Length: 117
Length: 111
Image (cartoon, rainbow over all chains, first blue to last red; front, side):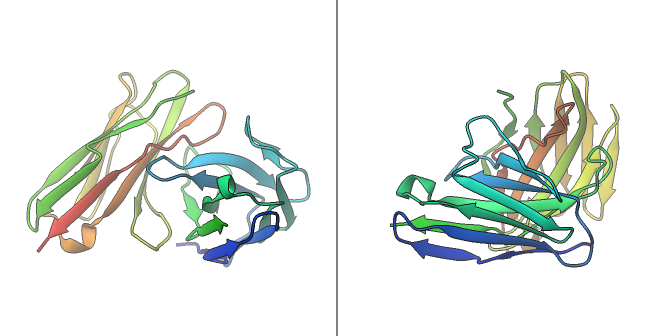
């Protein structure tokens, strides 16, 4: 199956710094990628939909100025957590796949665990 | 807010046992259901995409059924093996074109 990589796999940073997470589709092109966040004992929550060459679409309650998404190529989307605070500590995971999600599965990266001190 | 429930939350079985778990979801405006297996420290791996009422999919010892009218899906594992130990996630797809994930069923298979 298709492979999606994510980097870094974990990061610890100081409060107030920015952290960039990369999501790459290694063997296919992805016009759309999705970013999810998971808090302990909760489900994966969609944060935003990343569209190649255009602005991301954010879910209600997700601050677009806080979580900057860039999808500059068909194989790379980045999520930047700006001025991170301890409440941003979470597990972030991306996915990519076919346009027909009623027929085609999504391929997930392994996720990034962020700890903000 | 759409609520997707998976039960049980966790399950411990002996190697060789067959097991099943449930995904319940609002059926209004639903049109597909994804199942994923997620092993610790790995990427969630796709199992099935199901679309039709009465749809049944099978992959080796794992199979799934779907009832779109009443909004539930069952995942069955026949003859569980230690390598089946993982969290199993379901995610219905609605006409918003967004997957809504359940919290998962964590399966542990003991040798």
